[in-house]
Image 1: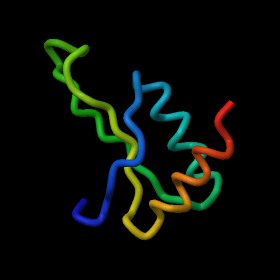
Image 2: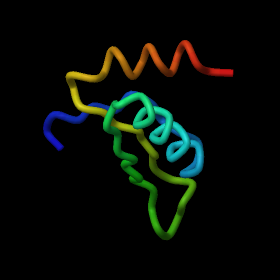
Image 3: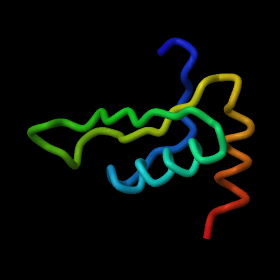
Length: 67
C-alpha cells in the first residue's frame, strides 16, 4: 500500500463503503482501511484510500458530488 493515500476519514464503515463505491463507479480504485480497535470501536480511524495518481480526481469527485 505504499502508493495509496488517504483522501477521506469516515465516521463509520457504511459511509466509507458508500464513498468507495462512488469512486469505483468512476473508475477510481479505492480501498477502505479500518484502523479501529476491535475492543474499543470508537477509537481509531476509517480511511478511504486511493492510488497516489488518482488523488486529485478522487478529491474533485468528492467535492462536486457531495449532497
